[in-house]
Length: 156
Image 1 (spheres, rainbow, N blue to C red):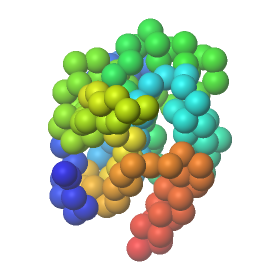
Image 2: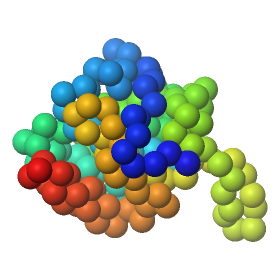
Image 3: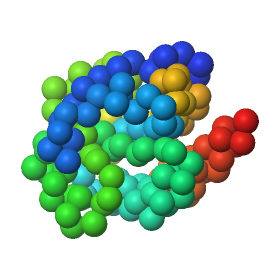
Image 4: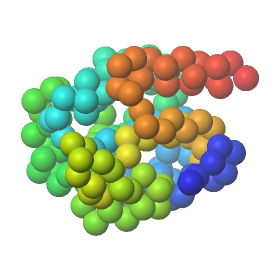
């Protein structure tokens, strides 16, 4: 598992802005990266919409937000358009970044075991260091909790 106070693994993925996004692009800003299981499903929609509603508050604190799942860019585009999401979603169809961030693993649902994304959020500082990790995220009020945590770090 990744830990606080280590350099966040760099990566490059296709984004809904049609450009490749690399974590290096965000040096000098705070970054929230949240990994979520699937576009347009109940929990993922709540989480994404909550981050979207708070986006201007994150931006005021010099923080970018990126959502990552293994959905295709086409799926991300539909999801973004349907809910008017104002930040980029990143497509990790090959599961490389999911594995790098250790969020791909065994899950259980209705007695069935399968591989999937463990809902996890990373807060990364302006130098690219992980400063907070939320594992097994419960979506209700999560985006607000991340914002409140960011406020603590930006006061330092």
